Image 1: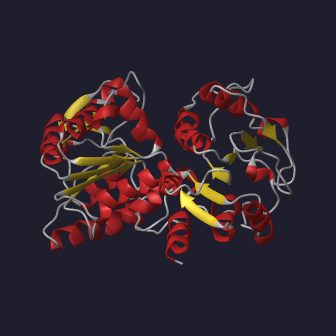
Image 2 (image 1 turned 180 degrees about the vertical axis):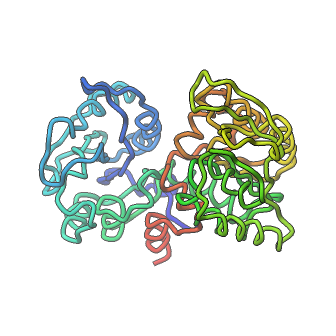
Amino acid sequence: MNVTRFSDLIAAGRVRGQRVFIRADLNVPQDDDGRITEDTRVRASVPCIQMALDAGAAVMVTSHLGRPTEGAFKPEDSLAPVAKRLGELLGREVPLVANWVDGVTVAPGQVVLLENCRVNKGEKKNDEALARKMAALCDVFVHDAFGTAHRAEASTYGIAQYAKVACAGPLLAAEIDAVTKALAQPRRPLVAIVAGSKVSTKLTILQSLASKVDGLVVGGGIANTFMLAAGLPIGKSLVEADLVNDAKAVIDAMKARGAEVPIPVDVVVAKEFKADATATVKAATDVAADDLILDIGPKTAAILADKLKAAGTIVWNGPVGVFEFDAFSKGTEAIARAVAASSAFSIAGGGDTLAAIAKYGIEQQVGYISTGGGAFLEVLEGKTLPAFEILSRRANG
């Protein structure tokens, strides 16, 4: 994918003295007192901001935070805690600017944080007048928020359309490179792990991947629907019986290409959904009517681990069991360890997946960890994200 990269503009000397507008993703969780409880996204935004400052730009940064009502700013919508944390990370004061759409004063070598962009009227609907006002604030627009790349909003799409120059920041560029490497030009075999509670939320992803991958590992509640489609008993497990035919279609599509959807040969069951429930390993054919399937069994985990270790590329979205409960976490741990041990290029995304990666301490062994939840899923679905589309159009236009 051909997009202009911020690093290339800096290398060409096109940033010094320029007004640079960075759309970052600083949407971080806070406690009831407004203290940031997890600052990964703020830390991830620092390299792009520092690049701009080092290049002698006048730097403006904005982000959304939470779900504010447009045109009705409330104290809890404020990026003030983010400005404080950003200042600590950059080692300088980061002034917070409200009511910035009609003009911002910032000098080369300075950085300001522009208040929550989703409070601006017309942001979510990508209002043209708002987007043009934003574009007029800068000489260079830098999109560095992959978590918003699937949304065509004024601060993510419209500004890129009308700014003099629009480019991808280092975070977004890294996502583009990882996605291209994993899906557009994969080293084979390409194995995808798609897990979660419901087939319905990921059916289009499963259908899209069925035409691309060599192996499609399903887990969680999704696996139960595929087990039912394969004629196996699932007891009282979470299932979407009305989607059995869709699951069969995915299995058949894979089989027609000489690829496969490995169905569990053994599972871990319990009589109730509780952390301290008694866990029992059973053959997949022996699940009782009152059993709940809460994890894959050790034989299945070993089979899948071998497939992952032999893969050329791995795409991972979702834990394969209720990994929050220790008794039902062994399947997800086995998958995580196999991904870590594989020589394949691996890309992982989604909140629960990141939690599993952190739980088992394999961050350094995963090729690329995607920061975007919904955006990552839409890429897997085969969609062209609005941010990728407009940046590519601007680079080639």
